[in-house]
Image (cartoon, rainbow, N blue to C red; front, side, top):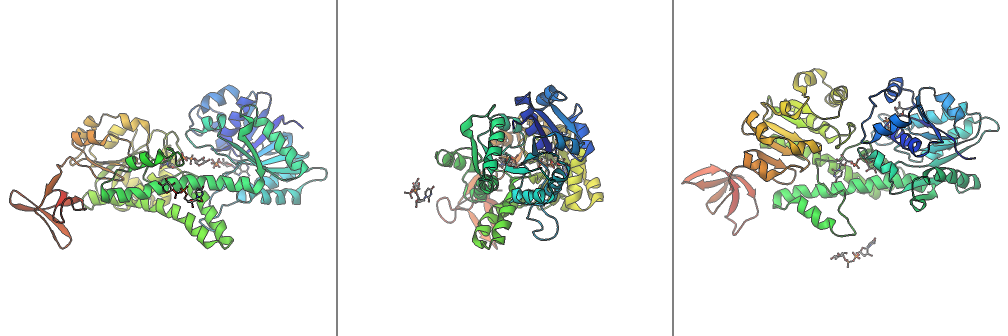
Length: 509
Ligand code: UDX
Ligand code: UDX
Ligand code: ADP
């Protein structure tokens, strides 16, 4: 068999871009992406695609209705296909065994059932979904239990490694493609079929065949390792804050060790996205189920550190603004979980906004790509208080109106456009003191301080107030006082480590 007809079940962040790229690379293969959600399919067939990815529009518009189709007719697409990708959502279970951690395999199972009851010829079924813990095994069981006479299925694992915002580039120029297969003649034959599709644009040595379970675990482990790097560097931001070290310098230094490498070491307000937290929790859950308590605890700490980081950032905002943000206005720059995507799943911005809303702050939120409906539904979900969201949240069309008359700017996403704003004009339009909390360390903090902003980043406090050193400082019941012009002032000590001797501090008054 040579694959001529592909069906993809699930037209989301994974299925949509993956199949669009396949269709673009293989004009002789007919690719049909199906979804049970008619609204989503209508969007894929319109001028405004349901997801934003650089380079995706061009590909879809050039191949759509030629060899790339979007449809709600799941059954016809299954019948016609030689190879079927399952790219449905696998959210974290919200109830029952493994609640809050295990992947909910219900949609994968449903897809397998539909394939088995619909197919009238043999198929290769490829699991692509984001969290496939032993999914291939469950898929196989459902397929075998329901298959018709004369029809057989071969299940492959082909995890997706695309990162949102760079999906097209990652798919076209993949570091590696994993194909997990059964170690049987039919398993190996199915592997070769899928490999031949990828080989049309990916060098052969980057296409790696392995056992099915290794392929599934590699996906979880890759995401766990990546997330671990971010939690590791983020854990140092708290230490930098008290010691005066600069986390960017530290990241630069350790990144120059070739064994470590420079990528994925940018300290942030915390990682988000649909994969990292979910995959690690899955790994943790699986380890616990296998009585590997120490292993579970090791990986759980990566998630815990991320929670700590989001909370620490928000606490700092509140503390810095005189311990209260109630009735103050804060401009939130960025709501997506990272730049170049409108996706908000597990976005750290959601946690930051929730905590600020709990404190009664008014939020003027600006994000270049997140849809209003999505933003409001995320905040309604986490606050469980629609009335409060309606009263306190304003969605802004541009960053300037968001900052106008506000007390602070909070950067939650590293969108490039935030680096190029006219911060002098913004400063004039804000209440004073005007704060900037840079949760991504993307701005020029010295420049902002010179304008007059009070600048806080995740690893340090900067300020337009002059730094002072004194011998004449004292500590009274845990509060620091510094002497200036013969008067004692409460001082915010920024360098707790004694500079020369125990009575000398660097401080702001
Ligand atoms: C990730 C993996 O990168 C990808 O290989 C896998 O297939 C799916 O999960 P994605 O979630 O789309 O991709 O985005 P990614 O670029 O990995 O970023 C995840 C989160 O980490 C974002 O919130 C991002 O802002 C944050 N991050 C990333 C940092 O805080 N610092 C960094 O240095 C890198
Ligand atoms: C280390 C650092 O590599 C070096 O840069 C630093 O200056 C001093 O500490 P060293 O302890 O001499 O050097 O050896 P290294 O090669 O880093 O190995 C450390 C331990 O990790 C060894 O027990 C090694 O067997 C183990 N290791 C290393 C692994 O188990 N797996 C690996 O992939 C690499
Ligand atoms: P991912 O990031 O994994 O791509 P998404 O939620 O963006 O996740 O996309 C998954 C898509 O799968 C959704 O559009 C959903 O409607 C679709 N889906 C879920 N179950 C089925 C099913 N049984 N048949 C067809 N499509 C499905």
